[in-house]
Length: 510
Image (cartoon, rainbow, N blue to C red):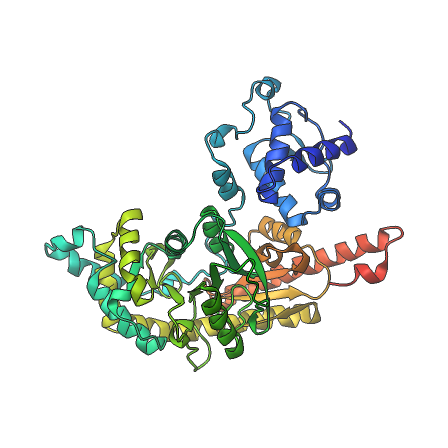
């Protein structure tokens, strides 16, 4: 089949998908149905992603993710020099007898919501290495102390730890209330704290308890895709709001379409690391009060900071009870612990505790009891003091390695807290293609463009974690990374020069 005809078939089927579908899901379903219906035959070549980008008005990163998903599922195959084509191993009979409107194989019973979740997953099975963002060095954690505390609660028969607990383990909530008062300047009672299995469950609970289908959520752009996926799965409409050097850049209040939720990372914006200014915080709180909206404050890594000042929480600043504070131990301890907490306004505490019990059932009481002791005996504070020094050394090693080699090609923001550094490219560079080359070299690189919901404001770059390995390993990996970046940049610049009739000035703008 001619590629121009193939492109036209894809365009028509893509435009025929329901308007409510996300574009990536719609394109995935369109191509898959063309294959299963036999309109794209085995061996048929697919158009290059660059051509489809202009034809369909989608970002190239979206197209690459769709092609990659279809490759993984076996619908497509890729041959060096020949491009991407429909898999020749796909039986022709399978197409003519395939059920329409549903996924085949592992997805035969998926709903549209299920397809949307599966197609927009950005989690990476590779959880180690020099550049994995958000991953602490679990080798630094005092597991011997943790083992002792777990054994303490397993040694004696404590039947209350084998049952459900309303909102979480009481002594842990009491310890957390004291800890948050000192560390985050938050005045809250144990009753206002709920213990959950990770931050995603906490976000899910907020969506279910506070929102109805179709409610609007303002999300930072760029922002955390994991939160967006959870909120979207609850039937909420995501409005991406741009971020600048003061944090989320709030639009003028619009009474016609106000948000129900506003999800922010004010102490260390994800992924830019920008700290929300005081004026923006005041504006945000006033807007939430005006529109009867709820602010979810994700305080995911503020405790790992490289400056002597404690940045106060939004929860502690709010004069009206419109803020819900979300915290996690994934960065400060280890990700596999899967314990997070919500701090809710007093008048929501009982309803949230009931919702938590009805939807998820509380558990992991032995781990919660050990965590209460771990905080109360000072082990968490001691661990944080130690890792801050080590992570700061690793952050500095990464900055030296990247900035001495790439110089004016990159610029960064934030860096005052957390486990990653964002590097934006100051020249045009395909960060999605770059991330694949880096993966082929045995490393993980998160392209910054994938964190943008609005492709019109998307910027190319690299999100580089630095905490999981030692400084020497970071320097060695950064040297390999810089060589790949330099080769990629030289290749793309060569392609630009060889394109006939190109407006050179427009091509050189980042």
